[in-house]
Every structure is written in C-alpha cells, then in structure tokens.
Image 1 (cartoon, rainbow, N blue to C red):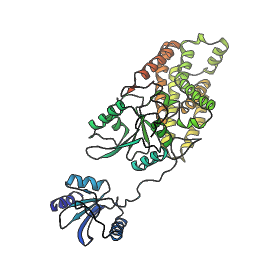
Image 2: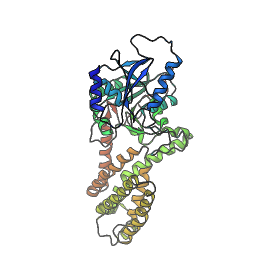
Image 3: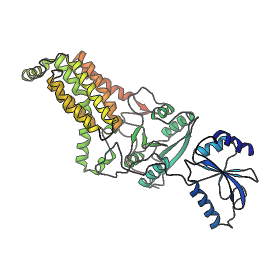
Image 4: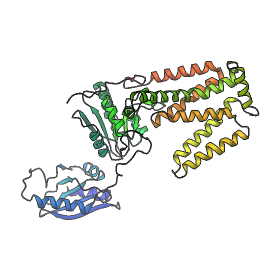
Length: 442
C-alpha cells in the first residue's frame, strides 16, 4: 500500500489543488488525500471528528474503518475516487486505503428558472448541472414507488455518470433492454456532448431529426415518464433527455394540460399551422411568382408583379438571400449577450429590412412572408425541433423553384416519408402514442 501512496503522489502530487496531510483519527495515524478544489477540507475533518466524538463506543464491522464503507485496492480505483471528489484515508498501521464521503465544495448553481423554455401556467423550476440534484427533482415531482433509477458510468479517459429513469410497469421492457445494451456496448465512449451520446446510443449522426428530446422543465420530463418513456440525465448537462422522440412532440407540451381542453386543442392546432407555414409558405411564394403565376387571380398576380418591380434577382435567389440574413440574425441574437441581442434583432429586423426594400433588392411581399415564416417557426414546441423545421423548408423551396406547385406537393410528400422512416429502437417517429397516460398502482 505504501507503493500505492507513492504512485498517487507521483501522478497527482504536482497539481496545485492536491491535498495530502498526515493526521490522527481515533488515536491512529492516517494520511488524508484528495483535491482541495473539490473538497471542503476543514468541514470534512470537523464532520469526521464530530462523528467519532458522538459515537465513540459504537461497534463497527471488522472489515470497516470508522464507518467508511468502501476500500480502494488499486491505483485506478483510488484515482477515480479522488477525481470524483472523494477523500482517501490511508491507515499507516495496516496499509489500508478507505474512501470517505467528504463535505463537497458548492460548485453547482442552485435550482433556478429555465433559460430556454418559457412556461406560462405551471412550475418554473429547472434542472441543474448536478445529476443527483436532477434525480432528486424528478423524484420530488413524481412520488411513485414504481420510479426506477439506474446509474451507469461511461467513458474511457474520463468517466461521466448517466442516469436512466423509467417507471416500472409503464416503460417498454424491450425498449429498455435495447437501450441498456447500447449503453453497455458504448461504455468506453465519450458522452460529454450530445453528439457523443448519440454515437454511444447508436443513432444515425446525419439525421436532422433529434432522437433525444431535451427539456429543462421537470414537469415535461415527469410527464414523459408517466407516458412510459425513458429519461436520461447526464452529469453536467442541465436538462433531461427524453426518448423515444415522436412527431407529436413538436406540437404538444405537458403544460398545455393546465389550460381548458378547448384552449389546449387550439394551442396545439396553432403549432401545427406554424409548422406548415414554415415549410410551405416560402416555397409557395417562389412557385407562384417564378413558375406558376397563372394559378393566381389576375388582380393578385398584378399586385405581386408590382411589388417585385425593379428587383434584379429571380425569386429563388431573392428568397435564399433574405433567408440567409434571417438565419444570421437568429443565430447572432442567440450567441450575443442578452444586453446586446435585442439591439441586433432591431437592427436586423427593422433597419436592414427597410433598407433592402428601399434598395429594390427584395420585394415588400417577401419581407411579409419571411417575417410570418420566422414567427410561425417560433411557435413549435421544443427549441431543437425548430431547427429541424427550419432546415426542412429548404427542401420544398428548391423543389418549388424547379417544379412549381407540383414541387411543393412532392417536397411535402418527401418530408412525410422521411419522418415515417425514422425510428428509435423500433418505435416509429410518427407513432402518436407510446403508452397509456396512467401510472400503475403501487
């Protein structure tokens, strides 16, 4: 064990936050090892001493030391424990190395409000980067004895905890088996990013349909658990990942159930209309202006032609140019600080829009159409889902520029076929329901 101590000092001793101190516990000399950046050393030592003082005569098993429950027998186990924030206690007499739960430094932020998803009716708590806090939040929202939590450590160079949550009796056992099999096969993969997790789970990397529905809201994650879905928590990711994902996720939110039923249906119908507007409206403009103007009534055709008077570009290039500007504005407003983002939106939406119309680079009608398209895209549920719909509108746009209105129908049919071809471990993306809406008794 002395060689193990020397090996730990050789590998970690050069770090600035390395903590190594000789001490005495219950009259026995020990060496305390850990990382001072992860451990509150003073509070930890005080906690151990209070425990020993309060129960000096407590009998402990012979294979335990001062109540510590786990022993590190190899250098790999000891290093893994140190890097995960544990305190190592070496016994000088016996050469044993015990792993203690220290008082950790508060490195994670407190539970706050969501930054991306907004909720009008419903709880506004959000998940944090601490996986155990997220599990606790889920248990608090779903107080059921059927809720099961499985923890898995994934990664070769550095281990990251992944928690799998499901409701026993509700989740599909075949689906769970395939998920656990993938996690076992990819136990040496990197899950520090969503792309890495998707690779570990065996999902196609080039698909624009997300296989993992992310949410910051505990109510949405718990609602998915009640419906028989599986929720993943990845350490240091401040959101829950729900799978399998389905097309209905674009239009339905758990918070909709806090409205009266007619209003709930109206809200979901609005999101559906928003998705259709996003995919079809720019393509319809290009088709009716450039390919099939005879489909318009004469008065409307003349009005459209008058709005494009002096515009030097064809309808497709005009639309792509303005769509590119809108995409840049949206991306810039997300990346910039919150104090600057609204200014960029105002400059891009008002000043730049008015300038390009005055300069006769685009038509007034196209400004109206693309503004409506951008607003409609924002009505879709789920931030990552809006990216999917934003990408698909270019399919119908390009086909409409070549085949006109017929190209729009063909593009929409291709999109529907693409959605129908997507599946998650055998669960179709266009399947409306994955399970019933009631929890089992127990």
